[in-house]
Image: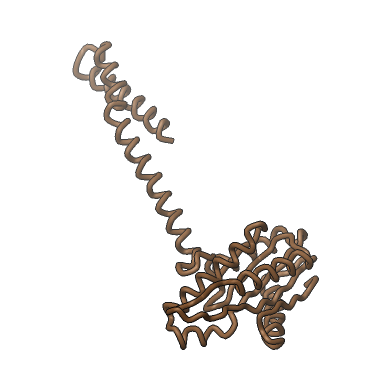
Length: 231
């Protein structure tokens, strides 16, 4: 586009020079034509370069803003909105490939905040998020923070066996965290509810199934996984 604008400027400059020179003298001459051709290049070239650089910088800033808006500042996971939109888009366009949604909730997390303070609670959430990312590295998992101490893991294409295996891996990874605020060791654990699907569904339905299984996992004593299959 920049080269097109420059070409138009050269043509316009040549035409204008010819008109002016024909009006006030015997014609443009070779010198006049050369000036008309190269002057827009000399003047407009750097200006177009600067405008192009500014446009690229603006694009870069916009990409950074989009990333900030879609990333949870504390854990580095996707925000709830970004996570929901990405999963919903997958379900709308590639539902036939199947998959699974895991809802992960930190057990007794209020006790962490009450005893050690919210700063240490934030540290625990970051450690849990790191454990989730580590446990799902080998998969195409989409990880989001759904709010508070609740996380979502979407597993595109995962069947019930794969989903259960990854859920157990996440649970074990969190249990293995060394969390010792102020030198006091405190165990961390998560309960996980999951739902797989093999036919067309939407996010609200899939989340409801997973959330129901999360409630079952909590009721069963926490630090465990409950799955619903073929939602």
